[in-house]
Length: 292
Ligand code: SAM
Image 1 (cartoon, rainbow, N blue to C red):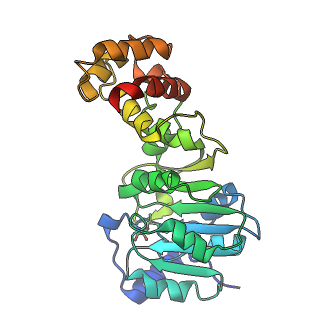
Image 2: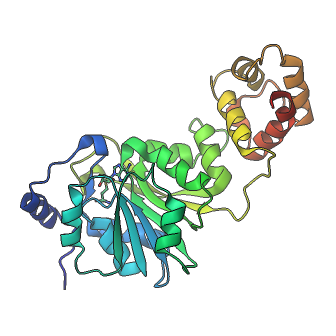
Image 3: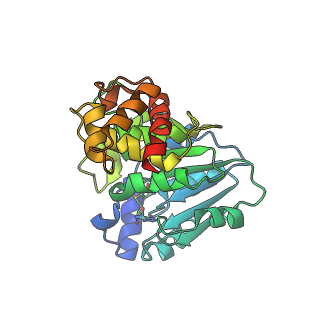
């Protein structure tokens, strides 16, 4: 029986054996609690037929649990120093492939085609590097990958914004960008003590389940996100004020903006945080002809 990687003693042993020093700039906070890892993996609802894609395997703590719970794991790791460590720690598993590189630059669709041909269920599961959580999630969602969803650890504050509902102070353009593609839920709050080294912020695990169809059909997705960002540019301002000050030539197009708000049945004096994604969708389509 193999010793789990994710215990304080084993992790320290591995780090010492390889003289590994953490790089803060790469968001290296490794998990040292096997129970937490098992619970994360449970939230992904993997089966023996599933494929798992991991971002940032570190020394393999989560990778190991994924290897036990799925048919195959492919993991992107940017830090070359971790490659020999991973081939050692994961040597008991023959269903793991480590891909050296920056996930933000990777052709993930191609990797999926190469690594998971014939798989009908794919999940991304990761303890994300905190300096790039949102770019990674947005990349994975916007590239239209054949994945069921993402279960990932990230800063609690970012998890709160991602899963926020209209009318709350956390609700903003990030909530909309992610909930447009997925149903978002926070499934675990995780204490700092289960990481080595401990991060400065609290952490949470979110589950993002891809919607079969986006929550609202729009004419132009990118324009929807441009409009939502504009409406949240200054949270205390009304939508009308934000749109006229943020959209290109917004001031001279005020009449068009007012007409679009009326067509979308959105009161110009409301604030962005009160609008549902469906309302943003209607507004985006009504504004589009004036800005394209
Ligand atoms: N999965 C391990 C665990 O839970 O213990 C390590 C998680 S640690 C928070 C994040 C990992 O992501 C590190 O191994 C780091 O080197 C890697 N990483 C950072 N930026 C990356 C990037 N752009 N692409 C791929 N991996 C990255």
